[in-house]
Image (cartoon, rainbow, N blue to C red; front, side, top):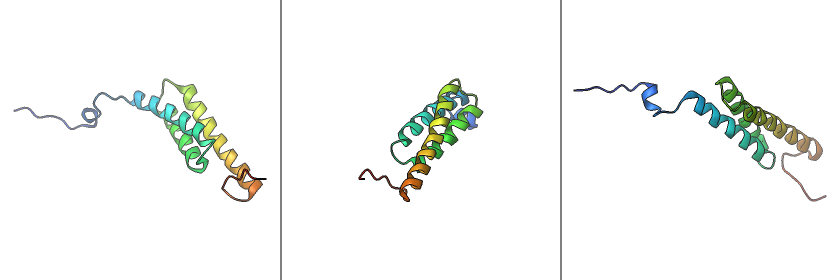
Length: 95
């Protein structure tokens, strides 16, 4: 009778920490890019966190993670500008 191990390595089914970091870098970039248009209050911080985690885990795509960090920060800057100019968190395109 053989016993199988249920260690975390066995449960990952071939996924490596570096592959997860690469996915985080791409997700950070995409969330930061989308966050410039919609939901920047949520997507900006998510892009910052995922970009930082990707860099900390040693991604092979550090430029994409850095772009995600920059876009996440830009999301928050856009949010601060909109709130300051309009006095509300909502977008207003009419005069």
